[in-house]
Every structure is written in structure tokens, then in C-alpha cells.
Length: 134
Image (cartoon, rainbow, N blue to C red; front, side, top):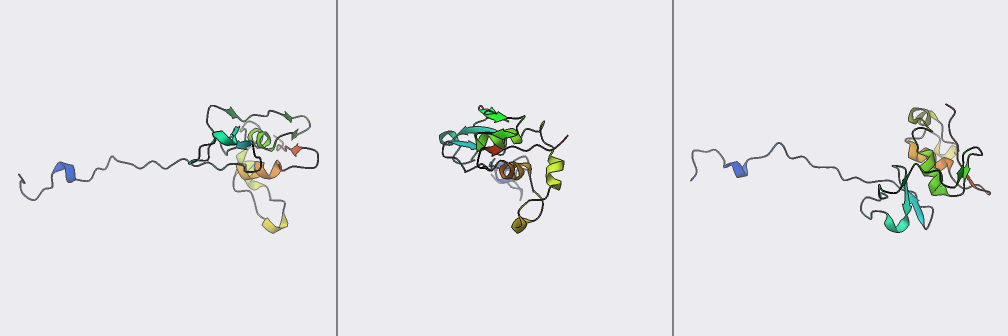
């Protein structure tokens, strides 16, 4: 039975429904075996989530495995990026003020992940890890 012109409750719009944004990570694509994501996790390339591109959150986060912090170098690009992303080692505000070194892309870094990927590129001997002074 329809009473008057009011819609039935099942047809009314609900205001308490919200859509959850899917979580999507940026990740390194340099290595064949390891990947680091922009949350600071390192995982095997086979364990990365195919939809979100995020590493499992049960793995190493902000890991400096294979890094010699006193020499500011690492033997793995992915661990270098993960280590660099550690908020206790780097300040986002300082990173966003830094100029990108390449003249072709003159400007500033838009986020810490871009900074860390750039700073951790391979040199001839190792991966360079650069922290900003406190």
C-alpha cells in the first residue's frame, strides 16, 4: 500500500553511506626481486598487492638492512628508500623546500618518496643515502 506521495523507506536515499577511497601505493620499480612502497615497507616483488601496489604491512618498515648509516650508503636501492622514508631520520618540511638537482626538472620535491627515490639512485659503488641535517 502506498500512503500519500511519500516514498517507501527502502527507496529513500541514505546519507550515512560513504565510499571508501581505495588505497594505492607508489612503489619502486628498479629491482627484480625487492620493492619498497611509499609507506616505507619493503617486500618481495611477488608479495606486492596487485591492485594497490602496496607491500604487506607485516614486512619490514623503514628498514635500513644493508645500510651503513655512518657512511650514508646502502647495498640495496629498496632498503635505501625504506630507510630514507623513516620520519625520525627526515623532515617532510625540509624535503619539500629542497631543489631537484636536474636542470631539466628544476623545481622542488613534491613528497618525501620522490626525494628518497632520487637520493637513493645507484652510484658506481653503492646506493647513496643522504639525510638532511637536524
